[in-house]
Image: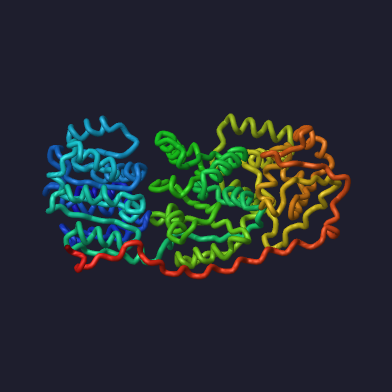
Amino acid sequence: MIQTLADALAARGYDTLTPVQQAVTDPALDGADLLVSAQTGSGKTVGFGLAIGPTLLDETGRFGEAGAPHALVIAPTRELAMQVKRELQWLYGNTGAVLASCVGGMDMRDERRALDRGAHIVVATPGRLRDHIMRGSLKTDAIRAVVLDEADEMLDLGFREDLEFILGEAPEGRRTLMFSATVPKAIATLAQNYQKDAVRVTTTAEKSQHSDIAYQAMKVAEADAENAIINVLRYYEAPNALVFCNTRAVVNRLTTRFSNRGFSVVALSGELTQNERTHALQAMRDGRARVCVATDVAARGIDLPNLELVIHAELPSNSETLLHRSGRTGRAGRKGVSALIVPPKATKKAERLLGGAKVRAEWTVPPSADEVRARDEERMLEDPVWDEDLSEEEAAFAGKLLEMQEPEKIAAAYLRLFRARQSAPEDLSDPAAPPPPRAPFGPAVWFSVGVGRAQNAEPRWLLPMLCKAGGLSKDDIGAIRIQQAETFVEILESRAADFLKAIGPAMALEGGTSLKQLDRAPDFAARGPRPPRAPRPEPRAPREATPEAKPAWTPDDTP
């Protein structure tokens, strides 16, 4: 290995290389194009940094004067590109390397000035890099190596044309290294078209997916899904936790709830600006926030070094997304937990996702409130504060406390203060227990609405219409019985006067639909059976072929 790079690894505390790092630094592969299967968190950034070293550095292990770039490293997202740049900066710190970045969301003029000053390695996102090449601010004639990081994700994000343009502009004699979690047909085609006799590298570590991640499928009662997430967060108290949702609306709801419960939380969703995303991720990295609630798209390419817990608040749509979400934890030899929140209706889907991902999960239940409190007590007793020596000031005040109060009272007060700093855990229902029977609706007043089955009336649009027009909540409305020409609706007697006041004397709903208050409950039995459906029309007879208005042209018609 090149000495300047070896010194950087030693200073960083690297005792051994990961399997992918060992594989791509094999001296036999020096100068070869590589197609590498590498999972997120396998140490691939350091791996390809080491792999391109012999191609870029001189015999002393250093760079010459910076000018046109010698290497391009392309990543799918701004966050991943900046993370790659940070890794390469320390790895090449002893080589005199000058690194530049070209990523979306940053000032293009600043990037152009940096390129004009000269750079040895450029880390970029595909779209912005293509812009610089087309504008002439980045020259490709000195390129010796191109690295595509997470190539499969770049194709998923629609960067195929950008990548083909960039690779087509790079000199034919350059090395091309593709790193991809999977190698679908699209990646194989890209490799075939733009690599020369690429060596396929698959390490043993990547064959056994996510061995450092403990998967837990947690069965919860339907109404307890969000409460279960709170208990999971409280039980593990991870330095960083990532909670995945499927929609922005759920991200916003959970973020608000966690914040109200005292969690230091940030959100990542598609509506955020690039600046807001950067601040949110920096808050996670520097410890100002511990929980990040995100959608799959918003979380693409992010890396949180202390991420120990991933929670699937909503199950993903496919096994690949499950692996990609979970792969944010358990990285570079560290352990992590991936917890799936599984209400009764989602059990079959969870089993299918886990089977498709070829991972084995422990089927369990979320931590109970008592288990969370017991874990808190363990953390409190394991706190290193107990082993610290007392200062004179602390000893004096401790003596004063002991004179004023009994030791048991002081300990109890300390425990209460400790618990007050934590969010209280939730009491969860037994997920195997049947749902409680619905309470009786109570005294009610019946109304008739002037639409029925003949007008395609359905509860799913009648209920919100009644709530909006009458200032009601769904709990104020009982039975909705749809008949052929009208619909009967039951409204709590205590809310009927407010409902009528909101409707007004016209007694009409949205679109002029009539409303009438009844003196008593309708007698559904006396209304007779539902009228029979009209018979279906007979199928049409097939059309007979009609002669063409003009006979087909034949050679004999030629004058």
